[in-house]
Image (tube, rainbow, N blue to C red; front, side, top):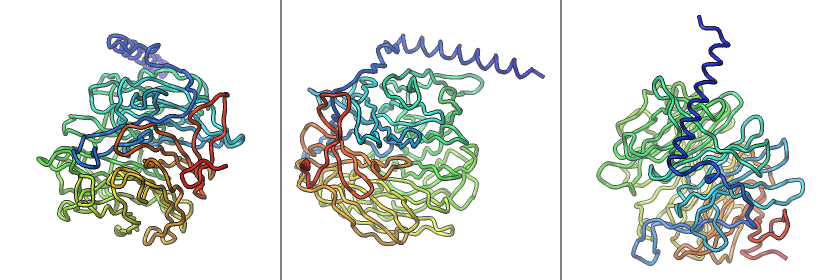
Length: 492
């Protein structure tokens, strides 16, 4: 038997060797830490404007706008930390002169002073693609982690950790590795990453790997320390692949996903699947506890919730929550096709709740674009809310619109609008993101932007009552108070 002290020494040696190897790899690619990690301050809050796939019609693009908190498959963007009474957040920022140059930004809202500091510019992602937006996590010791994603495999991905707990001024590049057989490999590329952290299981991360073997293979990995990660586990690789949305409950983690049918192109996504784990990802099961053998590779499998393919509908995933019984609740939009415009109406906001015996479906409302995006807040068993751009905006049938708050008193069976939160805006509001463990003063964050042409983009957040505040675009001091917004205008 090898003594425990020897085991520890070998682990330390392996980590050092892996770090050196990754350091060499980064230097070879011209992305040494002093180049990658900027740790600079911006003088205000500005989001990135992004477009995808010109459409050749009046809507101009398949989707576009102020996408600093894009996309649906990135999460989370904000986390409340009661230890310091601050909500930390990240977003895809831009320079003052170029709204299409992606900078990874980190900041916080101080609930004691009701102010924000100048945001930290973590890195220049060397792209204008908002698919490379960052996500945030906070570990048990209060260190802030930023996962810098990539759209596919052409660009590198990065993991950073703050130098000090609950501090955004300085971050260090982490040389992370994953288990691969008997050896370890650098983690230098991942897409659509979703990071969850718990005291029991450390980091539990869902992500996409392009061409592994499907064009978009959805995966899972975990880590106690954020440096040494488990082997990559493929969840599903059906036909051309998937989008997934994950979530964490009191005793489980889970993912729900759609799939791209072979031969139809990646703009088509349909069906609804759900898998969960109650042991930190060591094993996976269906919602009713039947064991699953992963990866799933056929469209008809035990994880299938609903066959939307036979109904002729696309499925656009929005959020996964767990109720007071630790049962999953899903939020998504269905539509007749991927193109913008009324021909693919209705875009139906739908909830699916597992009762313990069956899935119950509820209709929230309809909106005018597949990429309208909001999330689900569970304030109490009789107080579920959705905040999202469900109301028509200044660029109709483009992503986003005016923000509204919806409420259900019967766990998703019926919904009513509590409040329209923005009105009279000049640009569409897009991608409302839920803060984890939210403080009532800062429950969601999003951005705005013109739906049909490049524009500047502002950042916003709201409280639990639906009051909206704009983060300052220009700061002269080290801190500033956000601006209250009423009917699309700055409040006096």
